[in-house]
Structures are given as C-alpha cells and as structure tokens.
Image (cartoon, rainbow, N blue to C red):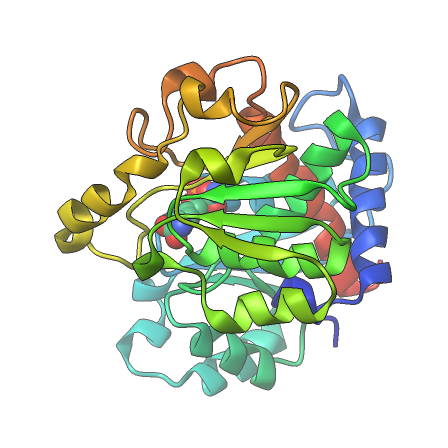
Length: 308
Ligand code: CP
Ligand code: NVA
C-alpha cells in the first residue's frame, strides 16, 4: 500500500519521481484556467476523502482542486461532523471509509491517529499535517526550490524559529534529497532528537545554532514558520514570542545569507512576527510559488499513492 505518511518513509527514487512528475504536470497546465481538466485524467471514477480536524486553506483547496483537475471527485469532511469525533474508533472509521473511497487524506492532531488510520485502511492514506510533521508542504518546497535554483542536493537550508512539524519534515527531506540543515532557534524549541538523528544518519549535516546571523551565513535557502502552531494553543503565545523574537527573518538577517538565497514560509504567516513583509514580499521570497506548488506536488503524490 502506497501510503504517503512522511518523507523518510518513501524511497528516494519515488520522491524524485513525484517531484519530476509534479513539474511535468505543472508545465502541461501552464496558462490553462484553474478549473480546466488536465489532458490526462488518471483519477477518473475515483473518490478522495479529505478529512480535516484542524483549519486549513492551502491543503484543503489544493487537494480539492488537484483531484478534480485529474478527473476525480472529492468529499470534504471535518472530524467533528464524523462519528470519529464522537467516539468511533479510528480503526473502524478507516475500515468503513475504505469501502467507500479510493484514497484518504487526513489532517489531524496526534500522529497516532494518522498511523492508526493507515494501519487499518485498505486504501492509501496521505498525511495532510499532524502535530509532528507536514510532508506535503516540503514536497512543494523542494519543487519550488528546484524550479528557481536547480537541484537542492548539497545546498544549505537554514530553518529560523520553532523546531516544529514543518521543520521536522524539512529534516526528513534533508536526509532523502541530500541537503544540509542548520536550525537557528532557542534550545527549548529544538527539533526532536529523532528527526536530527535520522538526517545525520543519512550523511547530511545538521547543526543547531543559537545566533541567527551566524546560522544564515552562506545559506541557499532561509525558511521560517509561525511561532505558535495550531497544536500549541494561544496560552503559549507570549512565552514563545519572547523566546523567538531574536529569530525573526528580516532584511538585516537576510543580508547575512547568500545574495541569491531564497526565502520560504509555508503560510499562514503572522507578518512582522516570524518574518517581515519586506522579506515576505521581497525579491528573494517564493512564498506564493510554494503555495501554488502544493497543488502540483500533491497531484503527483496522489498519483503515486494510487499507482496512476
Ligand atoms: N501551509 C499549509 O498547510 O497551509 P494550510 O494550513 O492553509 O493548509
Ligand atoms: N506549524 C504550523 C503549520 C501550518 C501549515 C501549524 O502546525 O500550525
């Protein structure tokens, strides 16, 4: 079963195939209306369930549009309106859903929900973000980097801020695509040891820096994300902001990176907190290409899952 649960759980060859197919599908659609069907419709007759237990704009819209462009149909569900939110087990939900739909995408809180869904589903399951990882985002980010700068292999990627779920998937991608990573943030918010260990074991360099300017020296790509993730809760906001303020990505910080260093943010952003508008809307920012590429990358992920 081709589940897409995390970047390190998919082989390097398959990941490369997904990125290449995403790029080809994007090129094939260039200039077409958003709602137009693709020439190739590998999802004709297929039904995809999109389950959201957390809010979403990009993931929700890009999966929905992407599946439809490929000729498939979608069903948008929120956890609270399903029996899943009212006590039915994840295993039973997975077995029942598998009788109706050809693929399940789920965004949830605890990773165990995703893993249990995948264990009991008899159709592929895609991780649309958990508290721990966000693999679809980083597939779009690799596609975006390579569109602008060529192969990401051997490049220096600097993550500024919270060592959160998006950072974790960047570490997984470092291992699989062969780039080096520097984490710049407070020690209290370091990425999990498991994620760092996995990347180092794959032979790429991962370092932890407490000084943001030192960290971004020679960076090819600078990335950040919100300081308060959906699973963190607003009560942590003040403490997190105080810890993370020195890691704001602003023009002064970007001057310490390579002159052509790209800037990425998965969005949604809190402008003037984790990054300034001057950087987000500046010449090195590719944030809206990243958002667009969620569509193309996920279409290729869905095809891979379904063997199409
Ligand atoms: N980047 C991302 O996953 O955005 P959404 O929360 O809007 O889906
Ligand atoms: N780290 C953020 C990413 C949102 C796409 C969160 O989990 O809320």
